Image (cartoon, rainbow, N blue to C red):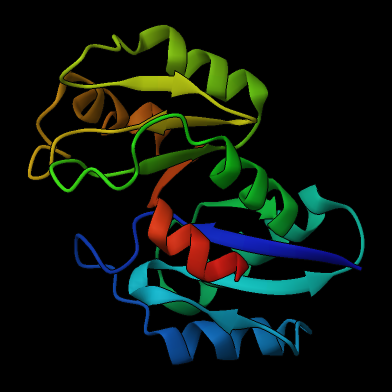
Length: 172
């Protein structure tokens, strides 16, 4: 059994509303009796057996059928989330900035995201273990060059971003 986390992309924004109780109920119906949700941004921790790609596909299909939208998730293990937290290279306590981790579907996606990022002092970006670290100024998480790149449709199905405080709650 693997301790996994489904990180949903694009829920509770843009007209797609998925209540945490409904999300948990769906995972329980899929056979993940120990499912737990965290924060209202689409985070579900659960255990599962089998091929991760098949688990991901099953969850995305069920989300789409239940909630009526084209669902995308990044599926990661709790150990992968812990490794990302431990490797965060910026000052997470800097009150003027948002400490983000961009989760990517795989290493190739991470490399592609990094290749398009221009890390600057104002918009710092760095590679992590299967992820991209990002530390924009507060209030600028939709206006920096990297934010604008992440908003492009090509990244919708293969990336999702979380604040490190949310990630810490998920794996605690």
